[in-house]
Image 1 (cartoon, rainbow, N blue to C red):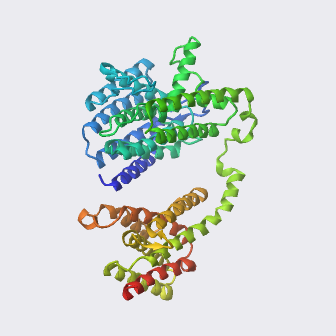
Image 2 (image 1 turned 90 degrees about the vertical axis):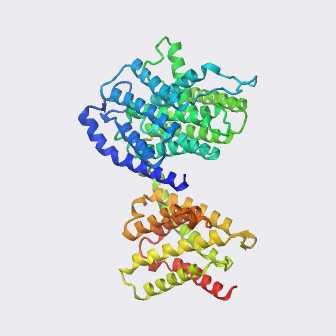
Image 3 (image 1 turned 30 degrees about the vertical axis):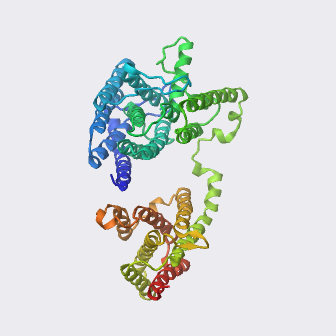
Amino acid sequence: MPVITYFYIFIATLTISTILIPPISHLAVQMGGIDKPDERKIHSIETPRLGGVAIFCAVLFSIIFFTDVDKQVRAFLAGAVIIFLTGLIDDLVGISPRQKLVGEIAATTVALLMSSLSITSLGNPLGIGEIALGAAAVPFTIFAIVGVMNAINLIDGLDGLAGGVTSIACLVFGMLAWKCGNSNLLLLVIALLGAVVGFLRYNTYPARIFMGDSGSLFLGYCLGFFSVMLLNSPGHHFSPVTPLILLAIPVLDTLVVMARRKLCGRAIFSPDKTHLHHRLMDLGMGHRFSVLMVYGLSYMMAFSALVLYRFTDSVQFVFLIMFSLLLYTGLRYAACSKFLGQTPIFRENRSFRLTATYRRLVHQSQGLLVSIKYLIICQLLLVVFVNPVYPLQLIWGGAALVTAIIFLLLFGSTWGDSILQAVIYLSGALSVFILDNYGRGAELYGIDLVWASHLLFLFLSVAVTLKIVIRKRAGQLLNSPMEYLILFVVLTIPLLPTELTRNFSLMGVAAKSMIMFVGYKLILIRNAKQNRKILFATMTGLIALLIRYATSL
């Protein structure tokens, strides 16, 4: 599958999920899918809870539209439909925990039998030999996936919590799937990630919609099934402890809460407010910071899973035990010291954009535009040092761009500014193409030009991202038909026939062109003619290409 297809899957699920949320919110109100406040819940107003419908529909559409549904994907979808309907019924009319458990077991059993996947071994976590499951493989796998489903369902207690934890896990599942070449797992992970990110736009504090059981059970089912798919990756061995580390926060929280309930003589599924996020709020943390704290712990465990997956089962298991002990020892110490409750920043529930810290960041972010400008200038000037081995067609293209820039500078009025911006964008893309495809082996003061370009774009992508996030400039990036056309051309380059592209590096060119496009837009947002340094660097690069080719220097 072409790599660009994964990008389209992500964009499709992100867009569908985002678009579906508002009408589903209205539909939830009409159908009675409302989450009402009670003594066990954090929120204080009635909130629609059918966000899981948008997540499920986005994933389902993208998988059917973009992929060939083979045996594993068909099995995943069969179980997904069952668990989604189970959660949806619970959201609309309510069902007992036992009935919900039957639906969870049915969905998992169908998926495993259709896919012929299971966890056949627990590895060697104790260092005394491999623990083979034998005939207990399928029952244990069902138990494990159902456990993950309930873990995600139970952690869905604060705005954005379950969705954020799932997104973090998906990032690492995707990286591991990419490393081992498990394309089925990668496409499912990317589809889910896009859908959840789109949903989080409406679910972050204060949430305008909840995912409900239709969403949380579906997310738990996905993460459980992803774990089994990862462990069954063809030609690659993963420790069974790796997905456990990756999902450590929800799994540990569920195990600890159930153990506490059992010790107190209550049913293990009886509702209470003893989950990790509840305990953080009891320490004095606000809603927002409690979520961020769980995110931070999830990021730490996700990163640990990515770093430790090559280590032995026993090393990973010892790490997991040590983390568990440190986490809950730290919670106990924090409860005794009451430090968090006495620190105002931890109790803050206001949006970060309303704080004095954010205002300082906005003021300081003006320097980011300068950084973006000079990073682009350096990139444009690097092409001057490329050996003149590029074909004549590129020279004609460069000459046409130089002519267009000169004409627009001399005769273009207000109407010509958007065209001038487009010409500058295309000039930047041309320089990237030449550098990535004809700059290999060329050096500048002993530094490889291509690697210098990679480093510049790394810094440029960081600066661009920070600027967009801090100043909320995303809505200003595309505001003319010409810019949409340029974006479309860049995105479709990797889809050209193989016989036309096999001799060129186009994926890197497309990615860099996207980053440069956004950087250009941020600094050319007012008037292209006023950015003389960018114009000078663009003209210098293009003219140098022409002169070097003509003189064969």
